[in-house]
Length: 358
Image (tube, rainbow, N blue to C red; front, side, top):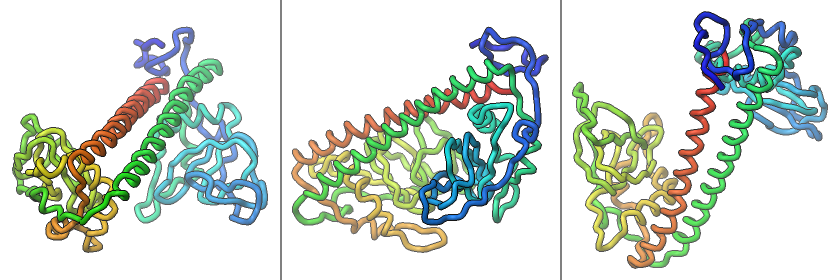
């Protein structure tokens, strides 16, 4: 793979396999796939898979379509979503069907990922992409062998990301199963959360942006790079719980000191003689749905501090807490590592998509 130093002068991508030279062609999609239409299949009792805008949604009794196809979600929140299908199936009318003649469906699939069909979407109430819009998209391509090599390279990375997703899903299932086993088996009374930790709420300033100063911000269930937050000098090894918004009830462990945002509770001054902070985190993470059930309000749900203070936890002796914390920490760290690997592959794919196409 070599960088093309003349990419500004020629119609060629920035990165190319070194054995290929010459400019690429551009053709509108309607000459590559002349008959772009919406699906027509209906749900019914039958043996054939029925594809909707994001995948298989049921069965149908008639095989209306067959062969190698690229599907594009036509309408709604998923408009622009791409999926490859090869077989006998039904396809609903909220999905556009592309059957290319000059290029492979997989090559076209990767190019349209690079192109980003979201740029074509119009309409706020009901986002929409039409066949007419797709037909006008110009597709760049080199010689068939170059197309094939690009397709193979990107497909290998895509398959690796798919495999990585399966690893992550299995680890997530393992963490949930192990958490359920250990926490549901605990005996003894519930202890109020306020008895083992101080619960403080971050505050928000108007118009004064704080610099990070070597710390990070926690707000709305996640770490964000900047914001207009009141300085709340919280030490490491504390727990934050999102107080409001879409992530209301989200629990995370903070390994570094941070600035606390205005929609975030912080569990600090955890009484170490009674409780292992990591045990408390894993317990609350397992009980995250119960914490979310404390939300009040429909427009902008929030959790009241008093309700959180009265949330009950199980406290076995410190030896058992330590064992549980170590076991769940070990799996969680593995989960985090696999997530970072996935993000690396995704970044690599994004880089190649940006540079292997014009």
